Length: 130
Image 1 (tube, rainbow, N blue to C red):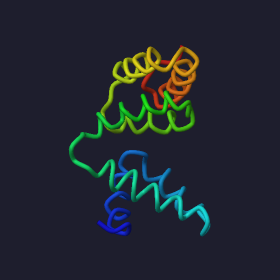
Image 2: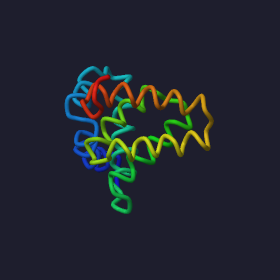
Image 3: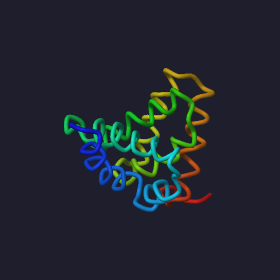
Image 4: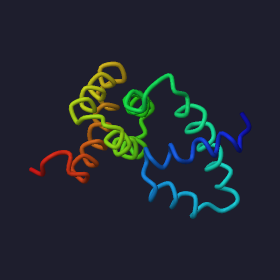
C-alpha cells in the first residue's frame, strides 16, 4: 500500500481515537517541515499499525499505555488515555495496565504514568473529583 493510501486509511482512525479536534489542529498547525511528521505518523502508526485488523482498538490502547509508560512519555500517555476511553477501555483496565507496566518498568515510570492518567481521567469526568 502506498504512503498516500495509508494516510487516507489512517486519518479517520486517528480522528476516531484521538478526537477530530486534536488531529485537525495538529494538521492545521503544521508547516511544511512538520507536515512530513504528520503524514508519517498518520500513515505508519494509524494507517499501517492501527489499521491492521488483527488487534482491536481496545487492545491497542492498552498496549500503547504500557509502551508509553515504559518509554516515559507522560504527554503521550495523556493523549492515549483519552483515546483509550474513546475505545471503550474502563478506568479499571487503565489502572491494571499501568500497574502491570509499573511492575516491569519500575516505580518512577509507573508514577509518571499514573499522574498523567489521573489528570486526564479527572478532566474527562471518568473519576470523581475528591
